[in-house]
Length: 366
Image (cartoon, rainbow, N blue to C red; front, side):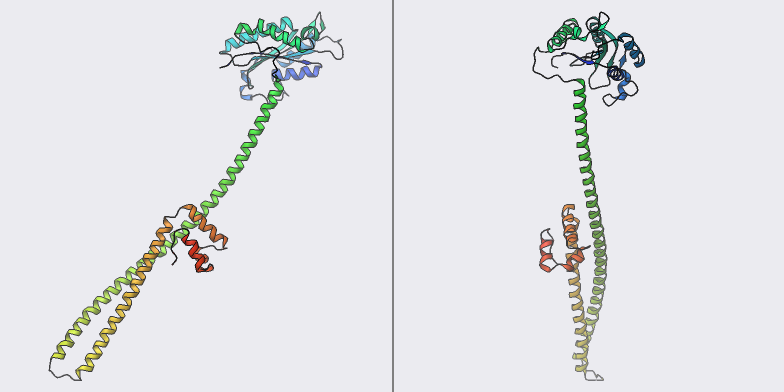
């Protein structure tokens, strides 16, 4: 932690209304603009008295007869650049500061320790009386030299006892008022709020995009499930037909072998036959070979169906292993073409365009 410096500032009030505003702020009275303070921490503040009592004391101390431009009160803000290690040390410091004000800078009207703002500080209002008359110039002067003298005096009589440093004399650093610090803090909060609003709008936009993407993926998933169901039904139908063909093939084969065996036996036999045997055998052979031809054709069709099934299953596997980004790109292609389904897209596009679109994503064209 760096050095801990004394903070000693004052401001002048020239009207009773100025004093009223100061005391309202000091005592967190009704009508006080509480934007600077955290209402949940106000109970931690300490006050010398209430607002009404402070106003009565001011009215009792301030002479009725005074110059029109006379300074009627001095407002002091006193603190340290770093927080004190404990509450006891803090209270001793501020009590010593109050005595310093009473000794050198007029009659103390009231004071408060504010712990509900950014940093803890002591605020006090005094009436600058000298010989029973208002004379702020005699107490705090009208220039920087007297203010520097007061800051040095405060450090010697108060700050030094608590291990605080006196700020560098004639420093070019600009010391900001409490009002300026509050305004800067409020400006930072406004900027932060604007950033948060912009981020919230960006998040809302992204959420809408994600929702749309999810809907598109959900639609693609449903389409894939429907395709998968159709493929399963086609697969079951192919298996059933294949079983029927094999059963028919086995039956034809067995019957044809028996017929052929009988034909061969009859050709070798010299027994009487009611009709010329050769035309009969030729007809039987024609029937048998016709059946074999039909079986062969059915077998070829079955192989074609099996090949189609394998191709369809391969394409389905590609769909299942395709990530969401690729699906979204394909969905974008479909939407750009003014289509709702891949079948519409296939029907609308030329063979070359479909080849290009599918090949770019690792799908074959069939």
